[in-house]
Image (cartoon, rainbow, N blue to C red; front, top):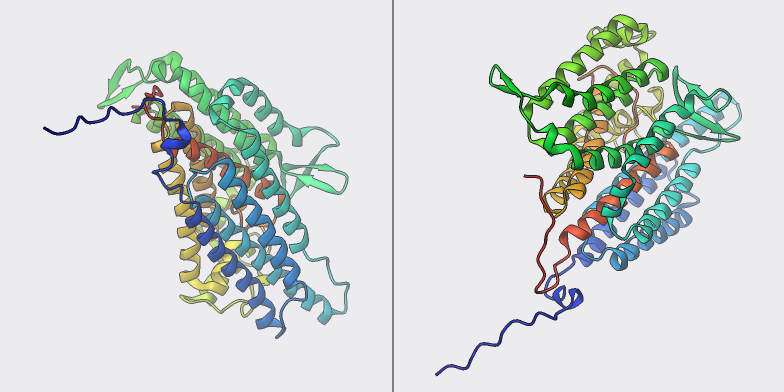
Length: 470
């Protein structure tokens, strides 16, 4: 007669239940070391190729970056031990490559100033490194303050008000600043900031919280047209309001890219929340109407379409940027010219809007595709976090952040490669600019918090009552 089997204990705590499941923090550390090594190699290789020596501040930069990323890893290890192990190293890799390219363009500007016997400009890599430090400090702060992402749902309408105020800030007289024709910046003394970068985070919180409470009514089908289920007329209100808000951004701030990003974010979350493809169709129709309105109403939008369709007719004036970008990509070919061996400084705004063209010239199509794969990994891990998340708010929030990064990447790279008209957004993590870098690291921090909650093993004997999205 066999011995009786012991009944499973019901008093095992969450800490004991987690012992059997590895948290993958060592894997994250290994990937982070690899990312740091590649980024520092790129930074050093720029000077070796252009000047034949290591950067004079190489040890200081290496030490600062090692300390910052090591601190971020330690924070994740203790504050979010079950988080996705790939998000932090992937974002760090992109950030480091962006620093290397900004440093490379700084050297080109320095050499040009020496040749022309003019004042040497201040290197932009120093403020970008400072913004990186601030971004990683905020990354850790969010992990420390936001213990549970579900608490953010309480601030749904606060996030809506804050998002609207952030979008309106550049329009305040004496506070907003026009840069390259777009009213997107706020200047406070020597500092400038782009409020729409923070707005994409708080509006993602609002969209997720709003759709969690209204998804049932938004999923109702009143009638079908050509086999497509259409919602009730009164349920069209939210998408019409967001559409009008995006048109207002386009009119008053002259920023087509931001308007497309916010509208695409809302429609994507609306589809995920309701699983109704009719919302995608309605959103597509409204997007076509909005773009058509912009084309026939605003000369700068129409000019961008004309440059897109016939770049070489404008190659010496309005289309000079995109023409130089294409020349640079062609010069790079498949394998690139190598760090410091190309001419990315010939492309206007190479540190911001066209940094992917600069990287494509010196790293080639192969290197640029590798960078795009890193972005794809971040987006995939964000969507995987959404699938694993046990609560609907966390699902939508993770999808929202992954969608924002994906939309920005598509709009930027599509414009630089002439796949779509140029819109002027910055490339996440790569481009020079503090507001975008800080906002993107904040999104990664929140994704890590959501993934920690999603991957954390449940205490023995408990039942997960979180509802999914379908």
